[in-house]
Image (cartoon, rainbow, N blue to C red; front, side, top):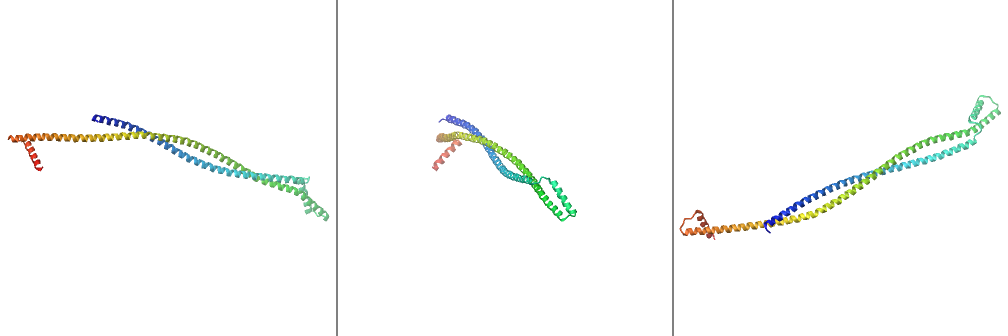
Length: 299
């Protein structure tokens, strides 16, 4: 291989290496960008999953509260129904008692009883008359007892209805609280579903970027392989050029030494001929012959 050919091959390899270097750097940059985008999306996905889990926990906690409120509300409604049934029973008792009450009003009976009792207390009566009045008192008290029983039952209904109103208030409060929590649960669940949809989209995009990253990384392999081959060719060519250079130096050195030896021998021959002719030698010629004799003596 001639020197121009070697230089041409080296220039071609360097050009190809420069091109591959630019292509590799561009591919590496694109790969890093894809990896960075992918990692950012994966971090967003991780945070969304965490938010989703927190929302699910919050929703489940709210649902537990809803179930507890439903149970309290249902128990309260059951108690209300039981009390309503009790009121019905009491009212039926009142209705039954009213059937047994005398035709005279309570106030008339009460007034007559008070008049008789006053008469007994303030009037001197015969024994038979007093006995008769006492009998009348018993009859009036018996008749009034029906009204008293009705009054007692009415009082009982009043007390029960007061408790019933409180239970209704409690039931309404539980229902309102239940509705509030149920609405909050629905809103939280909807937020969770929105986060899940968002996380799915981000995960899909992250997976697509990961596939693009793998593809870009795979596309770098033939570039790196080609660079390796060209680098090896360049190394071999450098070694060949180095060996050629060293060989040329050795050859040039050998040629130089041969030429110097020939010149030295020629000069020695000329100096000896001058010496034989009795001519005066120059200092260089004298030194040259002296060195030659010294060399011969050492040999």
